[in-house]
Image 1: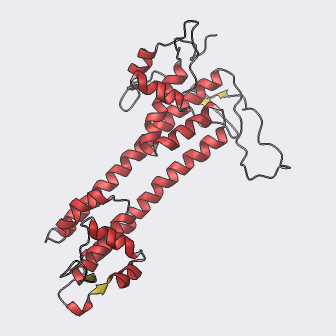
Image 2: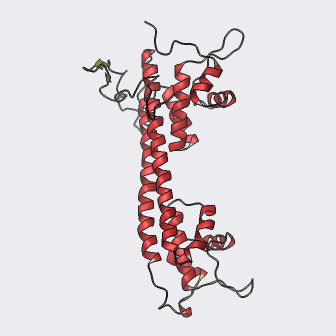
Image 3: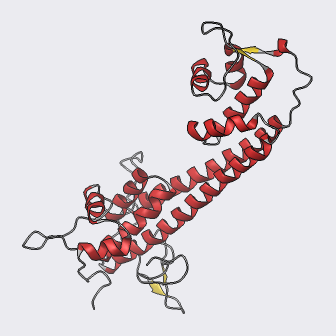
Length: 297
C-alpha cells in the first residue's frame, strides 16, 4: 500500500505549498529543519510530504518560540526522539506562560505606580543614581543606559554634575523597570515613555500592555499551529514504519534501564482516528490536505 509520503515533489511545488522561497527551503534543509532531500542521478533534489510538513511546522514553531528552538525541535523529530520533542515543546509553552505572568505582574505594578499622587512630594525626595539603583534592584549602569536612550533622563545642570532623580523621574524609572520585566524593548519604550508624562499616561500605558498581550496570544496560536503540523509530520514517519526512539536524559545513570521500546501498535477508534498509548503521540490532528479556517493550504 502506498504511503502518504511516497509522492515525489519538485522544489517549486514545496515552495508553493509552504510559502517559502526555493532558497529558503534549501537553507532550512541545510540547518536540519527539513530532512535531507534525496537527489536524482542528475543531482536534483526530490521532496516529499515530510518536507512540506517540516516547513509548515517550522513556520509555526519559529513564530511561537524562536527560529533556533524550532530547528532544534525539528532535528529531534527527524531523529525520531519523541521524548526530546515533547520536552522542547514543553519548554516553549512554559516560556510563553512565563511571559504572560510577567505581563500580569507588570500591569498590576504599573497601574499602582501610575495612580500614585506626586503633589505631596518635595524636591528633597530626589534620589541619587546609587539610591535609585538599589531601590529598583538594577545596576547603576542600567540607569545610565536608560538616560542615554532617553527613557529616564534625570536633571543635571552641567554634563559632569551628579544625576539627581526627581520624584517624577523616579516614577518614570519604576514604570520603565516594570515594562522591561514584561519584555518591552528599548525602542518601543522610547516612543511610549514621553506619553506617560501627560494626563493620558495610564491610558497609553494600558494600551501598550494590551498590545503586548495580543502579541503573546499570536505567538501562542502560532506555536499551536506549528505543533499540529509537527504532529502530522510524526504521523508520516510512522507510515514509513520507522522506529521512534525514546528520549533518555543525559543526566540519567548509565545503569538505568533504557526507556520504552518501539512505539505501540496504533489502534483504531470508532471514528477511524489514531489513538496512541504509552509515550507515543497524541491524537493525530487533521490530514495532510485538510481545509477550512485556520488550516494549512
